[in-house]
Image 1 (cartoon, one colour):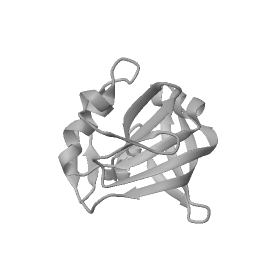
Image 2 (cartoon, rainbow, N blue to C red; image 1 turned 90 degrees about the vertical axis):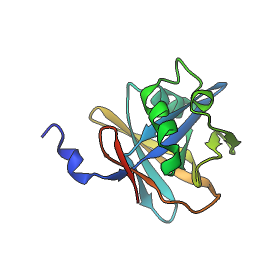
Image 3 (cartoon, helix red, strand yellow; image 1 turned 120 degrees about the vertical axis):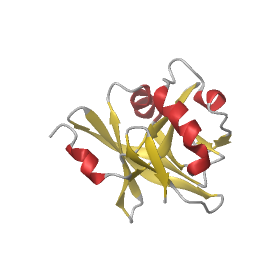
Length: 155
């Protein structure tokens, strides 16, 4: 039962941006999903121990940035380093695209900025519910999907 959720894979990988005051971070996440069309709500499930969890709570916003295959290395960097210790924009060579409340990622084909509307504790994760307040569609490209562990594909 421990890895039963892997039956749902492959899942789209997203780069989640967050910010509180001058602190910001990017985390890799596959547990990102639409919840409602009207209003436009998205769900994001984050382990409570993650640095990004704290930034989302305090900053009351998060960005869903959808990477393409050429950003696989940047996604791995963002998923294996803590924003407590490193500037992930710099380390992953990503460009900040200032949103209304948080930075988005210029190199991603699509970014959705969400304002936090509620959160729910769901076992060892927090389910954040965000309302889309800004959508940036920059170009068309296939998405990056996690097959398992550090194995990825584009679809």
